[in-house]
Image (tube, helix red, strand yellow):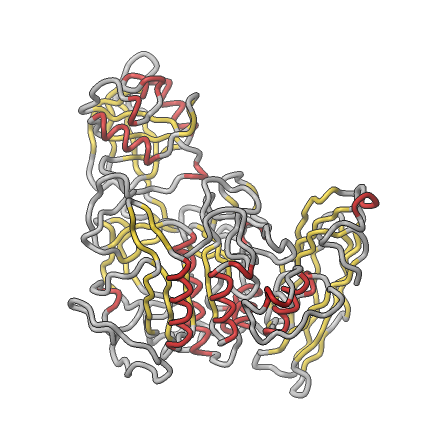
Length: 619
């Protein structure tokens, strides 16, 4: 991610701050405090005076230690070896357990979540990381969700709250979670590390898959129909013992989709020695199972199946390479990462940002089995985890760095810095890919882009917001005063006329229902070191939309830190709600302040529903 491992060496443009005196509140399942990741960093001072809470002493655990300490020689049984470091190793951690295991599932009660938000705010945390999401759709209204209410109160107290965008079985639109505009919603992307695993058949044919295998496997390979009815690798379809056999299982069969966990469970029940699991390349995420499981793509799987058409074959599977980096393009948006647009407020782009969330090596309680909860697993101090729950703390760690360098920045300014400095290209200078459909990513996949933790420290310009802006947003959403009082008791009344939600001073610009020429307003503040600055715009127009920006130059000085600009959007095509994407980038020659531009032209048959459409406003 561009951060240095050495606490005493800074990278260019990055101040020598590592989260000193910043307190990060975590709302999750809890931690294993005896982990080496929570050791005391050298020369740490006393707990910051801003902390008003109570620390609980644990077995072998001193609550005065730090968050994200550096650990040498971290690995999962030798895989992915290296040095582990949190985003802000000199910050403090306040853990609030809100999720509890129950019959293999995690239960996160709304009363516990609200209580944790209240406690964290009163305790004096500076950042809240919450890898939580409401369970599916429809999303709860902003005034009826503990997550929305709690994070709103945190925002009022100047606390940034970071949420996971949510995980789903497939990358379909409008499943993104935690879409309230006063917090940050984080998508998950890959890193440039894979674990290639070689498969060699008895006739010399070789294939390369991916796995987390640590030992060599020699066995007899057979197709799934030999041991399972209908050739479906399901635990309930086992028809005979598979002891000593590796079985070729396909994820897509005539009887439905077979997940890797289902295949491992089925072959394990049949007594098999391992699984070669065939799945689309874009969905492969190696995991830990009680038996070896190697992922391969459909092309290789079909070639192996041809070799097994009449009879089996001998197979040798070599141990996975420890973790090869720099050989695969990254980042790639994970197929499970929930996509936009927001189903509650489509004129606010969600997710906001993407961060690493696939196969992240993380500290792990040594008494808890690794791998899927439905299967027995190995034990380790480290484990590979994937999900937007892993990408969320990456962003929270970077916010801790920002807070230590810019303690006076508001949550909106911090979110702006993260979004406007994000990048949209991968390690081979191509547009970030979105796995699942294997297409170029767009703002509904990746938000503003992938987080750049170095550039966020000096964004140049920021988009700020106050509680008044959010109350006006809620009024425009149609909530009455009594409902809004659940979030902000001090609110008096909503204005008589509504304004477009698109005019909320958000770092991204989204118009979900463009019917005619529309003007969008934004205000920016210069936070760069050069107060005498001139910024010029560069515009990439969405397909079928003519975009112009006024003024053509923004002047900043010691006496004029803020400027307002206007974006005029004119549809030049006929469309029925199709969304296209562009961007507006303001630059002073050094900073590039980028806002993704998402416009959905919807001007076919507009005369039929012009008056009734609740998302239409006049400017």
